[in-house]
Structure formats: C-alpha cells, structure tokens
Image (cartoon, rainbow, N blue to C red; front, side):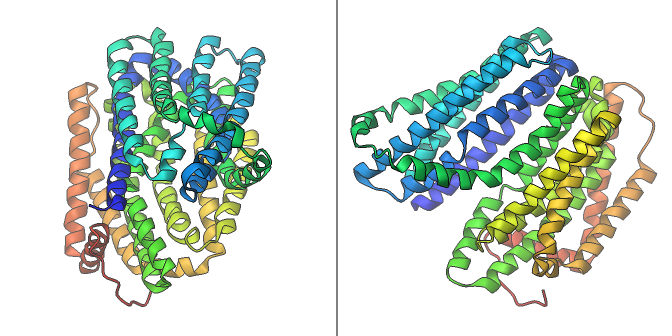
Length: 488
C-alpha cells in the first residue's frame, strides 16, 4: 500500500474519531452540567479559542509547507525558526489572556477562564504541523485517538454534577496538552541546531504566516463573534442553546464532508494535468450532490427538531429547538461553500475570490449583531449567522457565474419537490401531540423521521432523473466515477 493511500486512511480515521467521540459526550454533558453551566462553558471556550487561534497566526500552515520542501539538517533548522516564532506569539497571547481574565470577566469564574486558557498552552506545544510536513500522519493520528479516548472516558467517569464544570474543562484541555507534550519531547533533539538558526528569516516567516492567516481571521471572527457578544450581553442560557444547536449541525456537516479531502486531492491532480473539463464535472457533481443532501437534511431537521432536541439534550434545552431549525440552512451553505472554495476556487488559485466574500460576510455579521442582537436576542443572532453565510455564497457565485451554470436546476427541482412532498405527507399522516413522557417522544420522533426517509426514498426511486443522479453521486464517492460530456 502506497504512503499516500496510508495517509488518506489515517486522515479519514482522525476525522471519524474527532467527530464521533466528542459527539457522544454532548447529551451526557448537556444533562449533567445543565443549561447555565453549558452556557458558561461555551462563553469561556469561545474566548480562549479566539486567543489560541489568533496568536497561533498562520505559522502551522506555513511551517507544514516549509518542512515538506526541506530536507536533512535544513529541515530541523527551519523547524526551530518557525517554532520559536510560534512560541513567541503564543507567549504574548498567554500574557494578554491573563490581562483579560484580570480585568474583563463578565461574571465568569477566574478558575474556569484560566482552565480554558490552557488551550493556548495546547497550541504552544503543538508540533503536529511538523509531522504533517514530513508526512508522518500515523504518529499524529495515533496520538489524537489516544487523547480523545482518554478525554472521553474521563468525562463519563469524573464529571457528575454542574459544579464539576472545572473538572470537565481540565480533563478535555489537559488530555490535549499532555498529548502534545508527549510529541513535543520527541523533537527536542533539534535544540542542538539552535546556533544555526537564521534570525533574518524571522521576518520572512512572519510575513508569509500573516498572509496565510488573513483568510482564516475572517472565519475566526465569523464563527465566534456572535457567541462572545451573546455572553457579553448576559444571555448565557440563550448562548447555551445556541451553541448546542450549532454543535449538532457541525457534526452533521462534518459527516457530510468526510469524502471531501479525497475528492479535493483528485481535483488537484486533474487541474495539475490540465484536465479541466473532468475537474469541472467533479465540481458539478459536488455542487448538486450537496445541494440535494442539504435540502434533505433541512427538511429532516424541521420535521424532527422538537422531538430530537428533547431526546438528545433533554427537556431543559427546549429553547434550542427553534435555533436548531433556524440554523439548519447552514447544512446547505457550508457544504456548498466547501465545494466552491475547496473544490473549485483554491485549486484554480483564485484565493482572493475565496477570501474576500468571507471578509464581507464577517463585516455584515459583526455589524448586524451589534445593532440587532441586543434588541431581539439569540434568535436574531441565529438568523444573522445564516444570512452572513448566504452573503458569502452569493458573492462567490456573483463573480463566478460559471459555477451557477454548473447547477443542475432541473434535477434539483425534482429532488426538492420529492422532499417537499415527503415532508407534507409525513406532517399530515404522522405528526401528533406529544404525550409528555420520554417513550411517547421517542416513538413519535422515530415514526416521523422513519416515514419521512421512507417516503423520500420511494419518491426518489419513482423518479428516473433522480435515480440516475444519485447513482452518479455514489459512483463518484466510490472512486468509480467516469467523466461524461453533458450540457452542464
């Protein structure tokens, strides 16, 4: 088996582990900590994440590229140069974070914030970018699996009540920190080359890292400003419900995008060999596949949100039901955005067109949150989040009209009508008043979702164009897709 195939397998395993294990703890932590403490956790985590990601800059991305292009002793010297810069920036981040804790706590426990601040230390000792550069994914994945397993098991064993929030944070962040330190000690031998470090390259490394970080800065603000703002205006319960709805949708998004890295690699190879027609056809299939899957998921969320939230998170999170429904369109915008950016714009080197809409979407989100959210609360924040995502997609399509031409409007209309019909029939035949006990809610949820999926499948089977489209999608995902000329 080739090294490339092995690395793809390792990356897939890592994605599955990083997705499934944290998801398993959501219903347990939701019930054990309660709504308010989960809100405190979300607020403090968001603040720490901003500090950790911002002061990590773009050194990890730049470092992986530099290491991949270096050999021998030069590789170790370049590693030291970039790692010294990373540590310097993160040390500044730690200092500023402690100032933040000292002067702006918003009623959050100092202990909780400091424990969340260990995320900066997690990044401080993170050298996974070095192993990515040398192509040693096995070591990274093995470490991550052990860390995730230890953290997950520890949570179920030691976290028992709302007052255990500090234990929960310590276990999650502590296990990551320990895992990074274990890898970090393996690279300490490079210190012997410290006298060969070229300090004049620090400016060059910093400039490149900044340019690589700039697009991610918009994503960082777009993903976290609304949560920080909700916490700052004191809506901790609303923030808790908002975060839980987003975590579930994030899990669904990650599952939907599991095939994406493999397809991206295939498209990059096609672009490199100037086989642009076949590459565009993969983009065509991806756009339409994720539009169809997105609509299917949104209908499913709207149908089952009420029952699912009560079953999965508990009745105390009923406030998350409306947010779950409002936010559900991001399953369309994010997956389609992933195709537009990762499958199309970046392989073509159109990085500005990929980045600029993110900047505009971020500005729109921040401005609307400042003006509207204090007046209308967490539901407004959810609507603004979806609207900002739509703005990003709209701008990308506006300046890439060829992408709009790749959308199979006929097939998507047929699929949409299929899902709409199944949704309406399910609502008519199955939806009933919930009796109020867990068994009734559970049975109602299974019935609603089961009939919706069943009716959708029957209708899709009866529609020839839908069957052909779905067959092509499956063949593409299985690696057996053969390019065919089409009007699109």
